[in-house]
Length: 550
Image 1 (cartoon, one colour):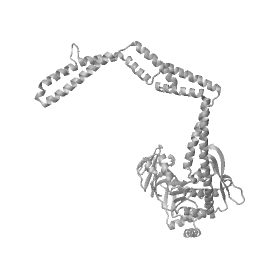
Image 2: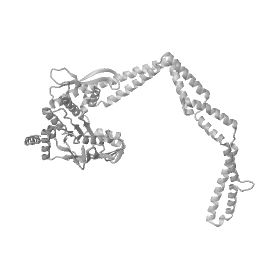
Image 3: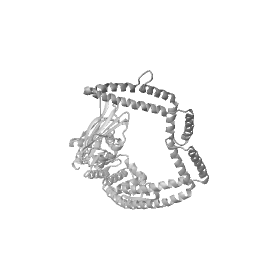
Image 4: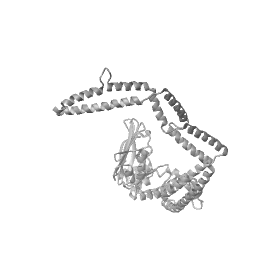
């Protein structure tokens, strides 16, 4: 669970330490006090998108640190080389230049990797998430999440991928006769042009190296001559080899008289042999090197041919030869396209059968899960003061698609006697909020996430319905940690922990503070929520009554 949140320089929060407990944690405060900033800070620590605009004016960076306790030993830690600790510390720093620094238990991680951990720790339901229920494109994912269809969808995706690949291949090869002839002529010309050049892999590199040698032949010859003369000597001077030989003979005569002289003699002898070897090598190279103006012309002509081919088919001889093989293969495919297409169609038929089998398995599982989901949601909605609502998952059979062969839409009827209709056409704002809460609660039972956050889930809800929502969240909080931002006294009164978000001014700047409330503080805050700024004895008594019966 989330135990501690430390915030620095995010929007109007200069510095805040917020402690959360098990059970039901409520956050209240005036509109604009900064409740959403706390949620944004939590989102940042979970690896979700963070903007430079979050950074407090006048500062260069913002930071968030969170302490999670009782963290299970998730595979994520081993997969990412991060030391596991049941008390996991996550830190994120956001800079004005857009740089982000994320750490988990002291180890640096990327934002995307952090996000993969975050979704396993906290589930956030924002105030605008309910709108996703209006989009039928999301309904299939809701159902699959409930049914835990990941493995079945992965299996289907593999079959569908094979089908899609074969279809693309058949489409690519199914060209008209005119296009086919034009492409064949082009390929034949290219193949003939490359084969005529008779290239070998690496030939261009060898030729360029030889050309460089020939172009510098005079410099090379002069250098070798100087080297040989200085090593062997000339008529006028002794070379290095001769001088070392003289030194070696002199030392050899006296080496027996001293260990030091003996060691010196050995070193000089070694140098003498090395210089003699170098002199021989220099002379061999001198004799072996031959230079010809005709050879240089031939190399230039050959490189000119290669350069022309490079402009068309690749940057090296190896790449040109690779293009040649591809061109031959394509030509063969076109020439025997009908045979190839027929072969691919047979493979496609088998692949489609496998894909349909996987799609039917997925559909069967979805339909079974849909019945259970509908019953579970109806049970949840009855507990949320919507006992007469009808809810069902409507299936439409499709051809093979990336997501299967089904479309799923949630239909409902809010009133007895009314036909089931798409949710977007019948659900009011308050009903939609409760439906989303029901969905979240049902799905939460399917995963291991221990902390749920509801940001103003009470939008459009009041009266008895609000009380039911409060009771539901309280019930969820018996097995999971729940954090809830609310404007409803019914929800605030149910909290095990109550945090007040307040905004004030100091030294010409706006500041937000987060304060845990005791029983007296909760009474006054509930009275404010009930009656607004005008707190009376009546509102205080109402607040006290709500807390007493919580």
